[in-house]
Image (cartoon, rainbow, N blue to C red; front, side, top):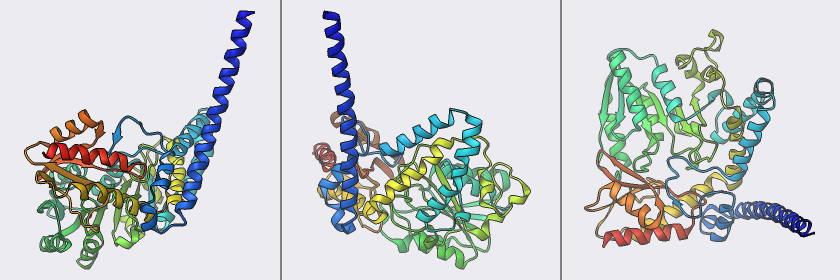
Length: 428
């Protein structure tokens, strides 16, 4: 009798737990949905400061409640709906992999390409789906028809994987790399444009432009630089790892010939997803990293011949686009700008605080780098985590020596208040 009673009690408890769990999941989903609907009724400026709505949108994420993650620039967490989509596609594919992957899920690539192109503001025939920015930009770097003596203009603050690729072409093919340096923080578009212009010679073939410097978050004048390149018959390669899904823009508006980005950063798509844009008339001039059929010479799909890929994560990109679109590019950028301003304005007048990023709205957004006089970047980073469980990215590169702080839409003002408190303590 006791065993039977115990069994019944446990059964009711289990049923109750499952029921409550289901109830809370549904309740949270409704909460997020209602918040997104309300958010869309507000202007970007109004939406940016509505803490109630953003607190509800935070529930869409499964981020740790004990670690304050302020390194979303490295890779961003996916909303729960994106995680669930990837898991659902993965389980589906495992029912009969060679059938469901290549005959079913693979059929979703073209609709996904169209969806990405709509967000990017370009033609689907100009977008290739790949794994990350490094793969995208390296495809261009190694695919361009350059010969010994051809010059490439780039900066000392570009991303290491791109720098390594250009250096390899320098060693292998004898091209010439012309390096630009800047004062930090960079405060003038005119200075940047002037240095690129001064570097042009009759042998200049490529401008390598990092749209947002990963070390500091500085927004480069990509549109003006691409225009300068076009006027001088120079190809423009734009590394957009930190701008797509972060800033509100259309790729063709930049006027670039080539653009690569990682979708697992600010768009919050599954890990290991990215895309490559090539202006249509330029596609035929770029060799793919992996061989493709000859009849694909002017087809953007020639850059997708990588063999078996992760169909599940690729298809879940569509869900990430849906979530991003539900917020809206302009509202998202406004919120990220507001979060940056919120903590930066509270510490900018402290004597020992250094800024490696401009505070001007047209020159920076969510990604920002600061330092403490007398402290190494790693020491500041360690102190933030040890004392406050704040996770950042310590940067020591060229003239930069401080942690990079990158909040996201799920970041709360409480999180940033903790950051401010920590900086104030270290600055004493």
